[in-house]
Image 1: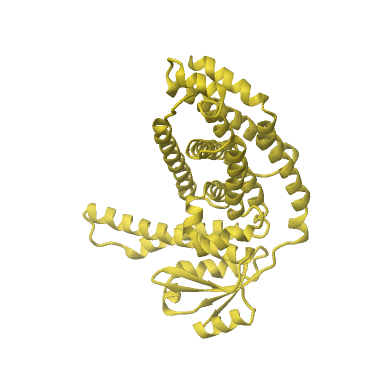
Image 2: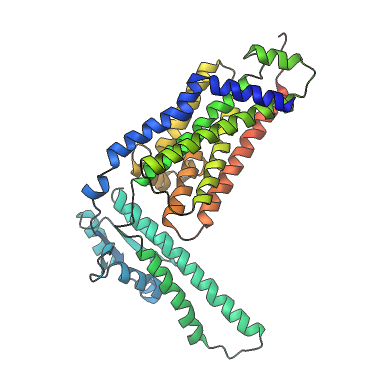
Length: 393
């Protein structure tokens, strides 16, 4: 029964012209427009050196990692330098920001950077991302130093050569500084976020497939659903086989988009192809779960459910930066909880992390967040399905 219903559901989905358009054709059409709009943007609008200020307080002067990193990133002899940095007092930093001479300034307080901006934009986003990378490096160096000291003490050596340990961890910090410095104007393909949101949109549009698949098994939505409700068969197997058919259809559409953007539009998603595929697969599962949730919770016709699904997807992609890359930064700064529960933002941020970062902690955090989102959505859908009853069919 499972195999039979799976084949039937798969054929039904592929024969639905509306579904094929939104799942296969629309993302490719939108990707083509993105490519036409942004193909020459990085040549015509190259990033200038970013003017920033750092409050030159005692804590900053005592932190060699922060001092050396910004010294490297602001070195005038470095042709790929990111910043033109002024080391000033707090009052001077406020004045420079108010006069528009800098995009923002940083105050190091309790080993954490406090960034202050007057407006939002790509320069502010770069400044923020660089400081986040330095924080990760600083924590890594601190942990390495503590581990080395513990090893020496456990070995019975209480005459610890702190100077040698300091030199070793400082060498690690210098290697990380070189990696941060690689986030240069030649590598900052900031229009990539538009294609990341396109992938996120495609993953979430798969929710339409999940919604249609579940509607086919609801007695108040289709003739097939009436037959399923009265048939002496396992409802769980029927629903599961329908969802699997929807998921496979969704993965086919996502694969076509990847092939088109990589080989035709020449979009560079980076070198971590297996992780990119994993993120797309988990994102598609989250999108399918969202469609299942809307399909079971809402008591409405299929057309209205589809409209709501499309609206939710586009709103999520808008907040993730599809209609303007600064929107993601604005949301992250002012209402961060929104993008913490926004699956489009999770997918976009996962791709963003793979492209710009050397560590995978933030990537796997997004993978886990998507999985949790999908599990919660499916659990709510399951509860709603079990409670559905009909006076007559």
